[in-house]
Amino acid sequence: MRLRAHHLLCLLGFRGLGYSPEFVENMSHIAERLRSFPQIQLEILGQPDDICSQCPFLGEGGCQDKGPQSEEERRKRDLDVMERIEVEEGGKLTWSEAEERIRSALTPGDLERICRDCEWLPQGYCTQGLENLIKRAEGR
Ligand code: SF4
Image 1: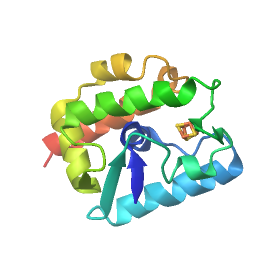
Image 2 (image 1 turned 30 degrees about the horizontal axis):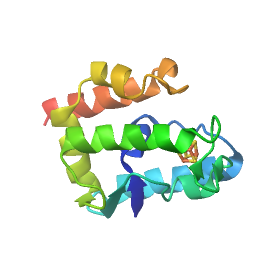
Image 3 (image 1 turned 90 degrees about the vertical axis):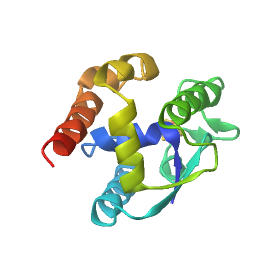
């Protein structure tokens, strides 16, 4: 599966909401696969991925969410996440390894910086998703 790095964080907070019915169906399917098969191999990207593929904002040149500058902004977010979880662009991780790296490298406060321009952050779902990931690991 091909995932842009910041989408690893979006997946933690995903609650069945999104940009169109097709988008939600596709992302739900991806989230379900990762839950069921945590050893699934991911290729980590800084460009459009398997989630973007069903997004109404994907255009020529990548993400057009807020206009032509959006792909560059999303890519910066991807690179920030890649640096924090120590994976190169194009690097391979299982979902389980990605969760472990996120858990040990990021705090909920980091999302305020990484995702500060994202319209979903104020909903609190992504922060709760990261908090739950940390709690699950502590209860192991
Ligand atoms: S195209 Fe843009 S808004 Fe759509 S999923 Fe990809 S990064 Fe997100």
